[in-house]
Length: 216
Image 1 (tube, rainbow, N blue to C red):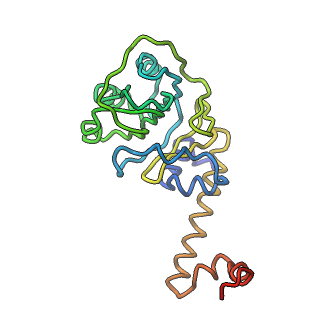
Image 2: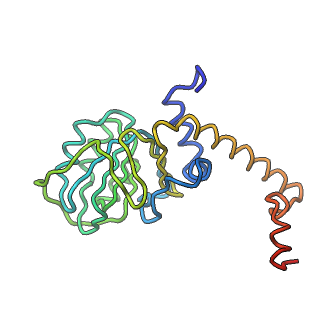
Image 3: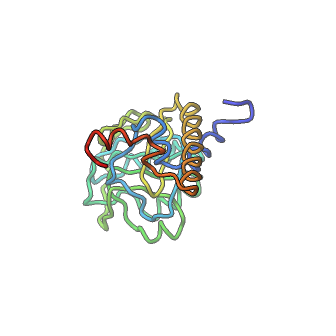
């Protein structure tokens, strides 16, 4: 990290670089499955995770977690993929905006989608549900969680946009920003070469592969 580049600068850089570039640059790992999508295509976010392990159909631990968050955090909730209840809605969104959260990722559903979209709060979920939840079950906050095949530690950086969601290990943020910028620069050169008449076969060195497969 340069003396001018703070952790906040690095997080802003990841947000600007985008989830697809970050995912590819860090070695094609860390992407949540494509079932978790922004509830509006314009939504994007990046920030350190506050993790929540909660029971399906219950949001007590979300109320507890909101006592622990700081401005810029992203709440990452493992609701076990349950889609027949929406633990998060417009009231939580109002609180999140008041507290300065950067976004929400939930392995489950949300409700009040139109209100959330109108309020401009980035939410990435597996689905939508009009059904409410209980507020009774125990859970855990700021513990390791796993969504699909991606393990997420508290404080890891989450990057989300229309392409999807990717997790950057907190110890690797500086390197990932560097390699993501290098990838962006390389692709910028590719786009310029294409404008000058180059093919993707040429740029990616695919001619030998095509010939080996008998594709002339």
